[in-house]
Image (cartoon, rainbow, N blue to C red):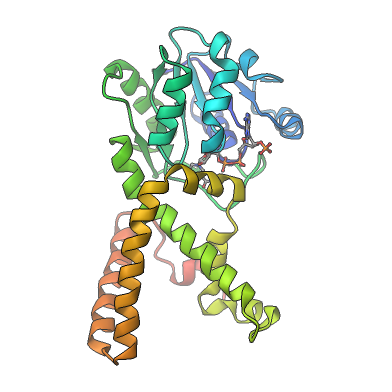
Length: 301
Ligand code: NAP
């Protein structure tokens, strides 16, 4: 059974267009209306032919929606909701795909105080952005975390759970603050580290840029994939999940100092024990189907 019949997607980039493509593939009779602030993205979205209609305003896109999913950067969620608030049907469910959740639920609740808001975060993506970067299988076998506010209607949560399951995702329910802490360590901190390492290498005076690129297979290039992620999206993630990221960064700095001491004082046993522990984490990720077991991420040699 279809959980929703009339879907509106606002923000037609990587995630928004992937949701649209996945719905087209899995629930072809659902009517999909799209809106994006960028006229170039709107024109491209029309040309891609995934949407039943692409509207010039956010208000026009929601007029008879039963589910509205906001796929814009987290810092834009509140202002987008304000644009369509007057046109939102009273029984529509409003959701999103933002990478942090407490700031989004706060922003949406402030602007849509009477709406049913069920935030969501599909833990799936790539370093690409824009309407051509999306694909219909992005959510298959990936987790989608729902963070319903305490008094959210159970039936609405179940409809959204069914929606994401039909797109191939496994659904987990979590408190918004807990989500932000978990994602700070599994996603936000790794991005911050990648941005730092790639920036540091770029700043080094004794090593030329051509050497950095030439010898990147030594590990550096794996960081560059993450560090190529969308600058606006990630600016918003760090500013919106400030507390959890700063807490994780503090712990990371302390752990880094421990490693620094181990290297300085030749404590090989300490280094080896940590590296053995981290290798096991990689094994568990592969065993749980969250990554491929191919050596070197399956690159051709
Ligand atoms: P994206 O490819 O850059 O797409 C975002 C789209 O939203 C862009 O076309 C952008 O237009 C548009 N937009 C920005 N502000 C808007 C506004 N006020 N009204 C209407 N449209 C607006 O980004 P994305 O990777 O799909 O990310 C979208 C959301 O998904 C973010 O909240 C992000 O945290 C979340 N997310 C991302 C990933 C990932 O791996 N990328 C994974 C999970 C969740 P412009 O061209 O004008 O910027």
